[in-house]
Amino acid sequence: MSSANQEDLVFKALAAPVRRAMLDRLKAGALTTGALCESFPALDRCTVMQHLKVLEGADLVIVKREGRERHNILNPLPIKAIHDRWIGEYAANAVSLLDRLKQDLEN
Image 1 (cartoon, rainbow, N blue to C red):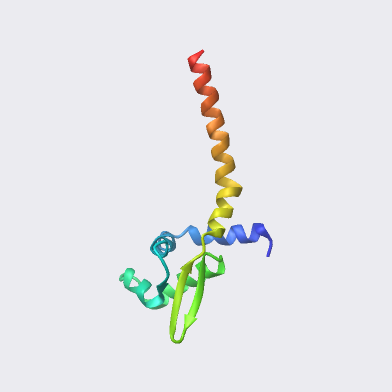
Image 2 (tube, one colour; image 1 turned 135 degrees about the vertical axis):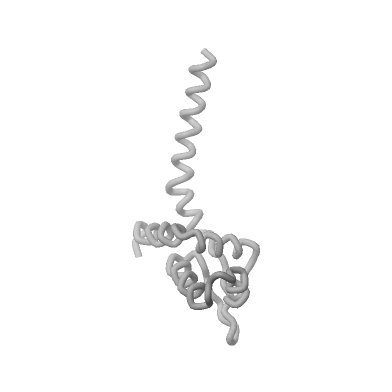
């Protein structure tokens, strides 16, 4: 898969607030699907699984199966790649612009 297609999957996955909330829950450590379902009582198990499938497809969640349990683990590398490609570059430009503005105002 090309990096552009992978970025599209990551952006699509991050577009839904509930998926971002799931990733926030996984920051603290791996959770079973059952534990994740308990964290989102407004959603039924099928809906949680559908969201997890999107996150897994974007490689944001890694799944390890142990017997009947499914452990969901955050994979931060796709988010880092987005940061490095988009946010870091734009932030550097913004800081440079602010620095020039500061210098202009001081002179």
